Amino acid sequence: MFISLNIYAQIPVTDVATNANIGILNGQVASMNAQTNASIQQLIAQINSNYQAESSKKSQERSEDQIEEKKNFIQNVSLVLQSSSFQDLLNIESQALSMIQEVQQLDGSVADKFVSKYLQNIGSKIDDILSLLQSNTKTSTAEKMEVLDILKTEAKTTLNQLASEFTSYKKAYNFKKKIQQKRQQTLNY
Picture 1: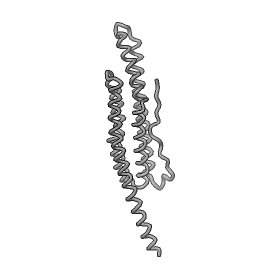
Picture 2 (picture 1 turned 90 degrees about the horizontal axis):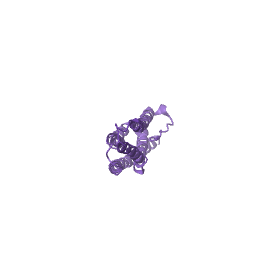
Picture 3 (picture 1 turned 120 degrees about the vertical axis):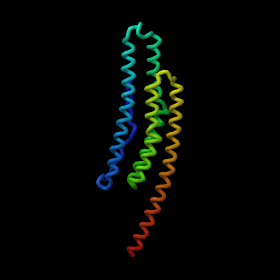
Picture 4 (picture 1 turned 180 degrees about the horizontal axis):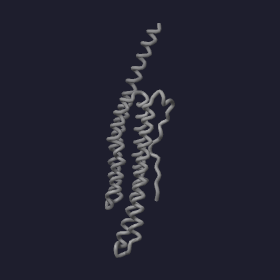
């Protein structure tokens, strides 16, 4: 059982020379993508390794019931990682990163605030669910899914806040840009 997820889309850069910050952000996105994929793969590999080790032990060390419990745990983790709720959480991250990319192209200092909120309230949710999957073997799939749904809801709330701030910022930016253009036109006359 191996799962490969490409979570973060690489941000296209049309002219890195004119905006080095976009290049930096691309590096950050690539790093987050690699780290998250690595965390998931490491979790799966560790679970597989543990299961193989447990399965190879003598029955006196591990009863059949305990081996079966471990097998069920592996299946439960797989169900969570492949669930629509987990995919929704990844999609929320993707939408947040898209907004960050656009703001980054307009104003790097404003984008930094978006990145901070994203890391604290969206990016951390995947870390939370992976930690739960790794540390708590006795939690049922239903309980894990319940926690995942809570984390997804919290991330969605933050995404909505970012979207509202993003819309307000773009309106203000476009208005300011129009004023500057009119002033320039007036000066040209």
